[in-house]
Length: 371
Image 1 (cartoon, rainbow, N blue to C red):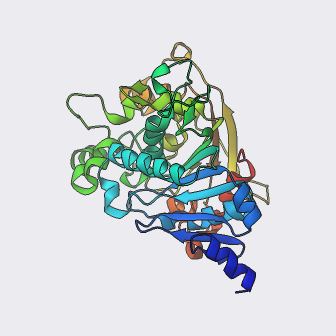
Image 2: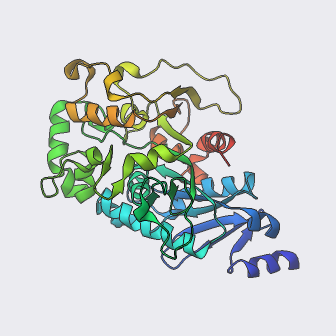
């Protein structure tokens, strides 16, 4: 390595420099990525928090994190969360969300130059991020005087997340409507008997997280957690936090994702799933459909026949609640890819050597990212 490169690495907490990107791993396994150019890294004030899925690790977002820094070197500092690594992802969405909340608070305290924040969550990581932002949210000062700064200084009159401006909230193949509905978990083949058995035994495999995903948790008589998360509940500002972001985006696999179905990841009814065709866009060959969905009030929701739509009542409530904010919906297809049966991992480029076909999805994400 050139002397200049060694000097930069030494001044950046012993980070490893490669291809203009500096990265370091903490004791608990989290992975930070930033530009190796000192002037770029010093001006980067946008924290991007990447959250992995069930049984995952910070390494799952390695490719995505490096691409963000390479393309936005003077804008972003990327943190790949690992407070919920491996089997800790079975402890429940709320427990994981609390850990992520603590992780983000500690990070922002170490880096006082940060001004903006975005979240990108894969699979269950998207739900964990939704929980965490509800805990990190601070209402505008004029709405809640109790949230004044502890040191007596003036607080930003706008709503913030841990004192930072919310920018992008992005989920990738995340089961926003849970996993118990008809064909929400494709490997169960939409067979009602299989789905009922899965709902009854899922906690034996995925423990508390499984109960949250199949909407059969009952904590002290409270509604299922995912239902609580479509409103501001107790001390958690779930919907206010989600609404505070300048944009919200869901990336969804239209097929071959055997873990998370298209409907639950794109927050749609069966009747709302679009007809898509092979893309002719050479830059994003796997992006097959995009739409901007406006927010609507509960009164605007058209009544839906649960039986005809393949949805249950609770799933419709989740969809209705989440539709009160606008979303950008991006549909992805790997039906012609060599590793299409691993679409759940390809869409994230979980392993660069195997899942690189999803690179255009990451590029699409970066190109539309609000800096």
